[in-house]
Structures are given as structure tokens and as C-alpha cells.
Image 1: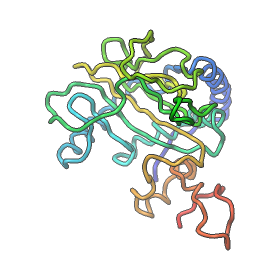
Image 2: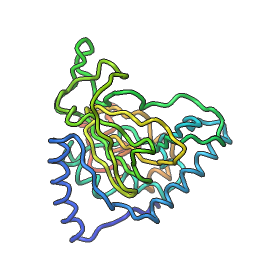
Image 3: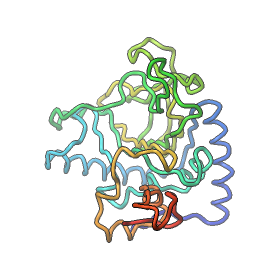
Length: 280
């Protein structure tokens, strides 16, 4: 059984109040930074696990990103210690308000824009150049769906700083609901700085890009969440044994889309969203 962090009633109340402020800031500014969600020791534990996972992926000739940007998709597949990075009470409070209580995980990845000379070249990675991760409503004009369908909860496991490839963003660009026409445009931008252990919430319509990789490690987690009817990037549940998936907490199974499995036919249930996970 995966053990996840639990909160007292007092902590839950504080989390709800904090979530309300975060939601307001994300809607207004496009981004909100919350420091101190994880301790320095917790962050070191997580980065140690991710460094080990990268070595294992390299040895098994699986995808690990590249020698200049390490990427671990679906990072929690590799170690139960990483579940708190996507199934966290604060994330739950924020995403329930930004999206709805039936929200799900769309795409999870751990990323490190770090030039590691000990790694082979690797493959292509995403994130460079100005882009959005919101859905495009009109490909001809670049108009996005409004309001946004998806939002990020990112985690700075190591500091986001000006000299270690911290994410760049165009302030309040989420309000344009437009896709950037030129990924290499010379735009006025700000740098998303945050201390290790911070959680960063932002609208997927925000124009952003990763900084240029450096020789300083900067592990981070990028979790995109969306409504239950949005298709995920990966078929999460199929990567676990049936016993393993059933042993996960119900709210984790929900995040992995098991409470929004379409029915096979109309002779049983006729609704998609269920209160309990569906494994058939």
C-alpha cells in the first residue's frame, strides 16, 4: 500500500484557505508560487530517487531525455516515494477549485535541464521555445479554449534561479488565450524563481519556455491536470498489475482515470464518472 501524506482538520482548513488565494492569483496573474510545501530533506530524498531512476533508464536503454535535459515521464511508476508529488492535499484543493472535484492527471513528468557529461546523448526533449500547453480551439487563428481546460502544479525540488535554467514566462499572457506564433520570438519575460520545496501553480495557457540548460542540477516536477473527460497522455493504469492498482488509495486511482472509465454498454451504468474506481 502506498502511504501518502495526511492532514489534520486544522491543516485541511488552512489548505482550503490557501487554495482559495492560489486560485485567485492563478486566474489573475497566470501563476502562483507557494514556498515551503516540501522540506529540504524531502527534496533531497526525491532528487536522489530521480537521479537513480535516470541511471536505471540509461542502463536499460529506455527514454530518459538527453544528456542536457533529463526527463522521467510518469516518474511515480519507478518508486512509491514519489506519489506525494502528484497526489498532494494542496494540489487537490487547488485543482478541485480550478477545474472540478472530478479532475484527473493528464501528464506527469520530472525534468532536469542539466548538462550531465556522464550521460550519453539521448533523445529529443520538449519545453524549449515559447509555447502553451492549453488546447487550441481554432488552429487557423491560434485561439485557445477559454477558460483553460488544464492547469499545472509544478514542484521545485531544487531552486529555480536565474543561472540554472529557471522557467521563463510572459506575465499575464494566459489572458490572451492565444498560441504564440513564433517560438523563437524576442519577448519581454520574467523568470519563475522559487526556493526548493516550493509548489508552482500555473495556467496551461501561460506563454512559457524552459531556460537554457546549465551545469547546475535543477530537478522539478511538472504535473498537468484537467477535467475527467480529457484524454491523458498515457494509459496510466495499464502500467500496474491489477493488485498494485487496487492497492492504491482511491483518490490516486481517481487521478489515474479509474473513476472516469466509460461503460462498455448501456446495460449496466450509463454514466462515465463513478464514485469508486472501475477496474473492468
